[in-house]
Length: 345
Image (cartoon, rainbow, N blue to C red; front, top):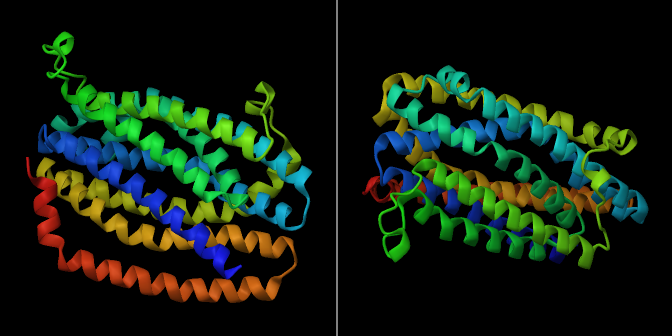
């Protein structure tokens, strides 16, 4: 299992890194317009993450429960949990999409968004509402693939999805003067990033569906996307609720800091956005290891190899601490240069 742990962790780190790189590019694209646009992008991104955290009530448990069933050779039950996860994604992702669409203005006002930032952030958050539902479905399907230890296939889906997003984001935000029939079109501004994201998530969802069919022999029916199966959901929530509560408390505390910076004005908000983009690299270094351990330990526990699971967790803690320390030192060392790149327009 040691070799398997490395094989799972490496693609996860690349996958999380790709997500971070796209977020950094989005901040750069927004900052190219103005500091107000950069601050609006960051504040909306934070709220998007907070709303998506509701899905973590079940998302944190999907991979663990599927992994344990696979480790115990209960393949039919693993498939039932996978199908149940889709309905959870629909109801939780869909409800947060409605919240983002209808309550964008009061949510951003709660974070003390300056007037110039608020004017740009509201349409962006509303445009991102559909992406909350699509991201919930994608996260469900990707969690199931990772539980089957097929992280490389999931990585390829993410590569294609992010490539589509980035290739569309700039022209949709800023226009495409190099195309004659769009030469006079100024672009959609910040909502263009959201439109590109929605399109890329649709592509990702289609690819995930193909992988479920080809690799897992799973073809969801329409009822799987809305019919709640309470028996597997209880197991998912038993694992997911404690982890989600921890993440939610962290996220709420973080949002308080965003609201405090919002009082300081647009430039302070933009600066915080640039700094946080780089700080997140420190977090994902440990997150990739943690997610890999979660999947492999689930298999070990399901197979009743409890001592191996304990040894793997202890070993991963040591590796995670060492890796995050090195990344943190590198970020501190190169901080001025990195911030200069982020703010350059």
